[in-house]
Length: 178
Image (cartoon, rainbow, N blue to C red; front, side, top):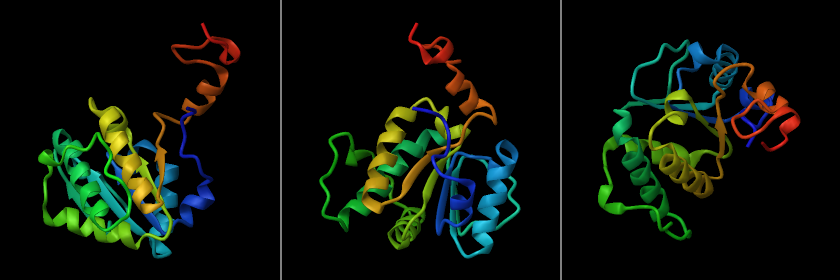
């Protein structure tokens, strides 16, 4: 899949809900930060899940700082809480025994339920997490339950261009398989 956020920057600045997971957006992608700030100033709900407190030039509606070692279980717990109020089926890959229930989950669930449209932006700490596969499955389930879109923040400005040019480990020039 081509790296990128999958939406225009204008659409991001007009989003009503933006949840950043593991992203130091102001440092890693200043242009995205500017658009998130515009959306926040226009009234968008902004959430952050991260292991550090990244520098931001706007106020988050919710900011949950949690060791990345617990992100998978925390997101599973959030999904379970969202699931309880839906008519969806419980995915097989969700182990409820790992559930971590805290006040932050309840607040995040409330924001996710109230989101009419929006995006979950996966930052570098999330994308490069050792358990990204499991985290991504949980986020896909959360997105399905809420109608949110998942977007991955690229490693840098040239990531999408390099991908289009075929500069990936499994492809040669022109995206021809090796």
